[in-house]
Amino acid sequence: MSNKPDFVSIGDVSKHFGSVRAVDGVSLDIAQGEFFALLGPSGCGKTTLLRILGGFEAPNSGNVHIDGADMTLQPPNRRPVNMVFQNYAIFPHLNVRENIGYGLRKEGLSKQQIAERVDEALATVKLEGLGGRGATEVSGGQRQRVALARALVKHPKVLLLDEPLSALDKNLREQMRVELRALQQQVGITFIFVTHDQEEALSMADRIAVMFDGKVRQVDTPEHLYETPRSKDVAAFIGSMNFIDATVEGADGDALIVDAGPVGRIRAGLPADGAPAAGTTVIVGIRPEKLILADSPPGEGANSIRARLTAASYLGERSHYFLQVDGLAEPLSIARQNTQAQLLHEADAGSELWLTWSPASGIVLPAAG
Amino acid sequence: MNLLANLRRPDGLLGYSILYLIFLYVPVLFLPLFSFNDSIYITFPLSGFTTQWYEKMIESEVLLNALGNSVKVAACVSVISTILGTLAARAFTRYRFAGRKPMLGLLVLPLVVPGIILGIALLIMMNWAGIELSLVTIGAAHVLIATPFATFVMISRLEGFDANLEEASRDLGESGWTTFWRVTFPLAYPGIVASLLLTFTESFDEFILAFFLAGNEATLPLYIWSQLRFPKTLPVVLALGACILLASFIVITFAEWVRRRGVKPVESDS
Ligand SMILES: Nc1ncnc2c1ncn2[C@@H]1O[C@H](COP(=O)(O)OP(=O)(O)O)[C@@H](O)[C@H]1O
Ligand SMILES: [Mg+2]
Image (cartoon, rainbow over all chains, first blue to last red; front, side, top):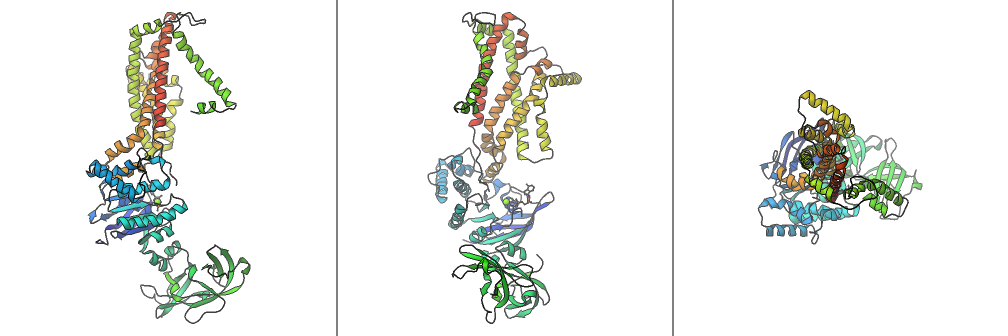
């Protein structure tokens, strides 16, 4: 596959509803064959952006190109794009086969060819044998498959999915993550899907665009997004994170030395775009699972601080602990896999422990945002 | 139907339902009963079986003329009010516009204003505007009261299906026009049929507005009313009433059946 990096190209697109800037100057390039997620809290403009790609909303400004062709003003029926709607929008007056074949009538195929394409689509989504069922006689999960098949049967260049798993119950949702990902690999079509569930985006997507208030804040692979978020907002939205205010002192090899007030002088990871100037105020973010509890101070190189246990919660495969460092406004949160039996309990509250972490676990973020 | 469901339920409601049905339907059943009675007097005991009143009915040219007028007016009214109602229902269900709620409230007004007030008001207005009274003025008044019915029938129909269905059709390659024929119309048509039939009967048996707004052509209810002064023709009116009763029953049952039969909306899990 010749993977065109700008197969879907969104150029400075804005969409306003009255005074609401639903989409605010978004530019994105999505590669051919990519599984791309639009992730953000409810109301951040994900659906609106997806609807602009599908042709259901005209942007106030900016443009949309798909495979090189300008699609900005094309109506939905003239775009090589299909959509799986959030509520699936299955035609209730048609049966499963008729739903799936709905979009093939305009393709100039014979009855025979249409039947073959529908059969193929039914097999792709594992609904063989249900073709004759009425649209109202299938379960929610099956309806989702019908919606998928109905779109895929058109062989679109891009498939748009709006919160495709949100209407399913938890078990089915987790199973469908794997299945949807496998399906995308199998058909090789570019998928753009919208979700507010960060776990869903991390587990399925090749790349994720994180949106807040109509703006794209970061576009990255799941791993980069989690390990090197570029702002406090993104870091807080993807997983959870401890934030410590600090002032830059200088760089030392591949670490940045910062003065973190009550936590003292610590070493943090050097940002990819180089060390900020000495004196810059920054925020150091540390993931809860990267803080390690210890009984004694660690060796050279690692950061460490003495802290007091304030709360412990047991979650089965892991536990969450909260430790207060004197002078910090909020306790630090620590997550630990319960691999050894040595658990801390609520009863241990007040006991003093050492917290240590490697310099690379400290992510340096700009102080604003 | 609820009544039927209750009938099958062995509790206090059963007796009540039966009494209710007797109260509702027995007086109506006197109509067909006396229409076959061989006497001009509407009293018991019955004096024998005859179909002469039905024969007289068919022979009466004035009656058939009035019937024709009523059918003409009702047909026009049902088509016009159903079109208006469908368009209004589409606006109410698909768009959010300023004044949507108050307008929905105003729509009920013709249904709650007493017919006699509406009749007088329309008569004054027609006089003022210099419009000659005729079947057309009756039809116009009937459109006024039938449109709210049509609108409510169509709103309940269109609310049952999701606007995304039309978008899905566009997404799958259909134009706006073919989407209307492949999605909107099939889903709305049971409502359209029900609306046509309901507004037809609404106009067909309307009396007060027709009374105020009639020119020199009478509709069937006006004709019947005029015949009540002549005892000799009363049984003919009963025969006519029985026929109308039967026809209305068939039409309304059919309308309800179509309306209920239609497509159940897909309930969403979210
Ligand atoms: N048709 C519309 N009319 C008015 N406001 C809208 C419309 N669609 C979306 N919005 C507003 O735009 C913002 C973004 O909405 P949406 O794209 O649906 O967000 P998301 O899918 O991320 O939850 C919200 O504030 C929403 O209320
Ligand atoms: Mg949404």
